[in-house]
Length: 431
Ligand code: RM4
Ligand code: MN
Ligand code: MN
Image (cartoon, rainbow, N blue to C red; front, side, top):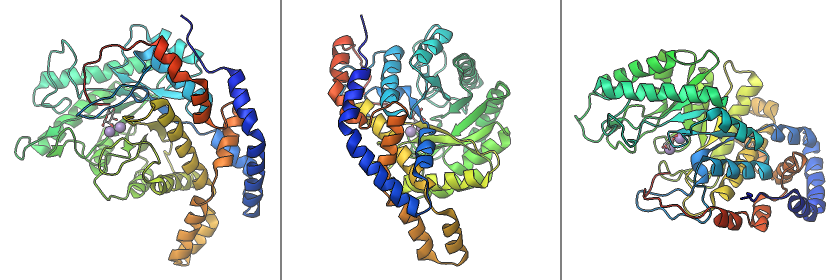
């Protein structure tokens, strides 16, 4: 069976219909930026160089613990997921890598998988381990934890799984392992919080020892859920301290939804940068907790402020600064491909807006204690509509001026619904 993909002809036709308007808008924006001393084409090139990894689990319809409402033509397996990731990258040209999750993405031949991905123009970013669920025929349950489990045998099993993930990642060309554990407790007194962290650190030391020389390990913290009284790696402070103890290859991963309410995430980012411990991001947006909503859909200003810290760090040449960018979202009511395309665009937008902050004017206002003046420097960048730059970046990179409209016009999902008859899935909820 041939697999439908969006044709170059359709892409060209869709772009042609929008090209004149884009040229006009782009020229007007470039002139306006020029008056501020900003080179529009150089900005477009910076936007083109930005990439974010798609999580393989993000292309399937998500759910909550109450229900999941599968959409038509969902990917049934990893190779379907690759097709969807390739479609996203084809149109937005900002998602050249994918971040796999094991054992969800387990397959028998990873060298072959890497080749198939490469044919789609995709490479692999960080691999994610999973010790938050039990797998069929698994010897030791993770019901009461994994890397921090009180039983040495359960810990050993979780350690071995992470080391397996490294071995898989090596075959895929990954350079990092992301470890998020669900370990924690639901009752005061259930767990000795000090000893649980000790056990986690001992386990992580063994995983760390198995890292290839050019690999990093990312510690992903999360305040609560599924553990509702205490989590072992609950916050960025714990994550930082643990990364510090483990060594230079260990860094912290910031998932935007994993913090205490009202914390200043951009300041956390700045702190981690300062200590050379910012490993990367799981981008999403959130109103209440780990909502996994689409990036930039709730708090776009906060996203901009995060990028403002990143650009500041890059321009200062902050030591050890090489964060990786990944999305981590759950798409419950949208077509995941559309959500992921729009999310990648929102990241590019925040990036571009942060790039046009007048850094010397900002520094001058800060030095003069001009609080409002400094704020207005940020607002001037944030309120600039950089959409024409983003669209031009996509066009110049071979993508779509209007990715979602083009995707809809192609009828991709309708075609996939025919190609991918539904398979029985019993699991409610989760991502
Ligand atoms: C967690 C966390 C991890 C992700 C899982 C699926 O909440 O964000 O990054 O791997 O969900
Ligand atoms: Mn995450
Ligand atoms: Mn999460």
